Image (tube, rainbow over all chains, first blue to last red; front, side, top):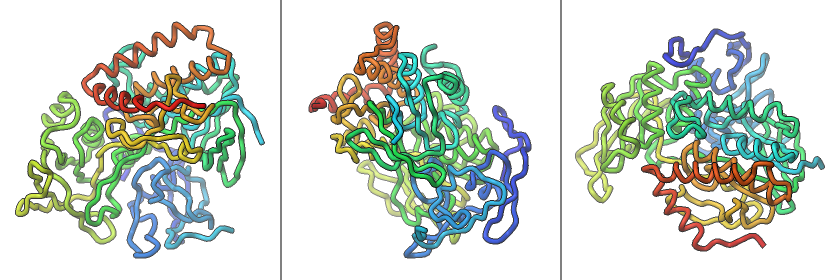
Length: 101
Length: 364
């Protein structure tokens, strides 16, 4: 959910950025990271753990903890909390270590 | 391989201040930061700072970030790499950088590691459920991106960060159900705690989180009281529903890059964990590699800035190209840093630094 009223900060409506999450067409806004756009859409499970298949979400927001790693345009292990959202990105949840191409 | 006279790893308060001083001394500086924006954690801090004028008192964190960024962004001697992660640091002062799917090597005459800190974690059942966030992450999500972390939240930790972020959650319209504190007393400043309590948020001391519950997302937590020896008191368990839990149990200095060059580190509880051993000029045990800010001990952003200014000045002096106002500025920032450390939380840092200096191993 996005904040619309805040005593100190203002969050004016920004340019919409369309992208694809798990095959669905969705929209974030300019200035979003991939993780913030997904969070605003109510998506909090960003990946599943490799061995036990447990849901994993956003934790540190500084690109340190690897909890938000996802597949972006086919590239695995992208730290979505520090990667700006770009129009047309294809975002998928990761369930394995990923393969280096 | 690209070359710069000075590479600063981390564009937060400490790194930016170091860059300003070095650039003013005529040194060619490269700042590398993994985030999309410079300013480190300041850019999402909406509260006003304490301290003196030199420490930007009464200014909000994000406005301080703007000041520090403006000081470096157009400086002709400063180059900036954003969305760039340093993945390797080598003793011959080679830095390897991953940026936009490209891997590049840089070499420098001097390096400053100003990597800051990372959020500590807490062990409890199901602590990996989505909806459990670090306090810094919650601040980023709501203050930088304008996205709410949840509707009903419990904060774990009553240090200053826990208290301040709780207040900011209230400002953003989130229902803060309470603040959990394992210690018998509140960790942060009384002024912050009182403000929160006046707004009706309870602070439960001698309490911890026993487990989290939920299927794909956090739905509830079980809290439990702790006795004088920090042991859980059976029978005091209670379950509370919520959709977000915020963990604010302290920070760890990010010393990992320094470990890659075998810089000597020491575990000092007062400074937040493993920290590099540094000399009076902030040089680590590896010649030419310096460190400052939270990476050498957890303090406030104000201290990180003062340390950054000082480290920039020391590096310039060590390169035989002192800043034109070197002596006066060193005296000024030394004084400011000392003032900060004379504050109520400064004593911890002072004890920590004393322990660190006890077996001070200077660079060969």
